[in-house]
Length: 168
Image (tube, rainbow, N blue to C red):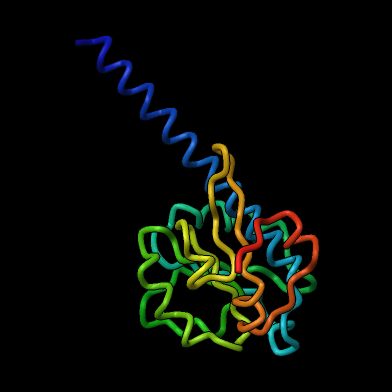
């Protein structure tokens, strides 16, 4: 019995560590997305706002980056988003896997407003988001839908698309 408890505890610790590592990489990717996108003129002043809708486990990692880094001359601010919040004032809206069904509802509100939707569920780059996290051979990667990004009013660097998996 004791060996079983120890084995289960070890598996939970490994799973928790892997999840925390994923959140760290997602946050770093998001920072690099911000740096490799050309934002509309109206979005190049004030704070650079990253909104998180859904599971907030990535917020501490994003806050750690925001304390040390900026995007151009803009300070980074992290905002926890509720369903009624005005997402048009954000630069990036990250919709976590647990709230991915709501991603479509945000797209109509932000079309052409310089807001990039980043999601975390297979298939969403084809239907909804501009960037979507995926796992390939156990490694975190991302999909890029250039059409969705263009519709949101931003221009993406070739470096960002070259490092991602382009979907249409």
